[in-house]
Image (cartoon, rainbow, N blue to C red; front, top):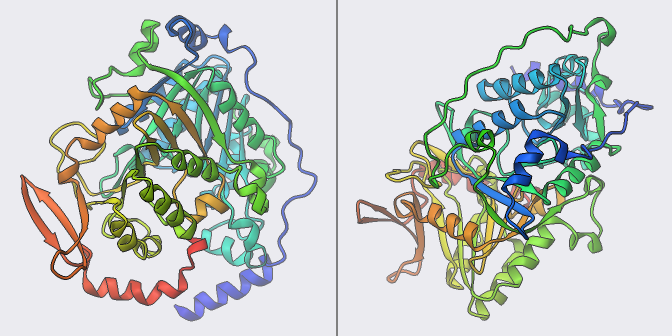
Length: 510
């Protein structure tokens, strides 16, 4: 087996090591719909907007409702659908959403799909064939130049180009008719909508309408028209003109079934759209997004302009309290210095991240673990999601094995950030990110309610032992506390092996 592995690596280096990205690639520029008010979705937004308000929002904590809202927008779009994701899996939910997008294109809607190239291995011909459909185009962002059949061969073929391919597009965005949008933490795949039979992600999106949608579409356009976005056909090995599928070909769609009410008590957005009136939280907001040029590297001056820089300034402006939810939380020295200043000012800080057992990236947990004790010592209320949760009431937490994937910050119980940003070095400095800054006491209160629902029985509370001063994990089940003195739900052997790997996991790569 090892000999075959080394042979494959050698052949890949010889065949793909000199691979280069296609040159003289034709990209037809395009932009978002200029007249969303002329569409059905645009008219629903107009008729729903209170006097003096500009942007409306609805939290999407439930996987079923988040999935259903995407399907609802795809089915009701009349002119354009713009879709931008880091991951778009080919599982049941991915295929269902893909079929709806293709069905929209076949009825005349222009569909643009922009995917990061990290997980498109072996899909070049599929994505290129999809792009042969009228009104349907797929582009891949910052692609690997060679070895495109698998992730392993891609990495091997890119050993001389790692500085470029290490930068990824982590954005998540779904826009219909430039009138309604969804952004937040979810990728497209079963586990992001609580549909996996094995492990799922606790995640969060926000549905947005009104004035905020145009700048979201502008972010999509900037990435779509950038030099880093390549048409999927640039990597196809067959003649595209022979593969066009007739536009009249029928496309199967799947029925959508959702709960009667979501975790916040709202009806499905599809129902409200069809009724012509949306019940939303209306507030002032702004879009924060990295430039696609971030993949070329950051200057010291450029760091302040990133999404991470904007969120850090949001936190530094706190007057009373901060709540941070991040699946991958590695504050680094810069983050720790900021937290010390906040603690010195008496700001109450709450942080929720994954426990080791719940974390889908054990190496990232290593980077986080070295900061746990200093955070608890400075007074941070630190919580870690348990690998299994017991949900009794609707809330953010699931009832099966799940990892935290939601990314949000709430400051002073009114200023809210929801987006794709993890609070770690990779999100701050390497990947492109995006999100919304929303000034809304209503949304902040709704988030607080979601977090408090069964939180005590879904997390470990970290503290220092009164007797030894060591870290302790406190779990609560039916009002009874259990105290752990080492990482809960993992073996000592696993912890030891992870410790041995720690020198191989520099913080800037986590």
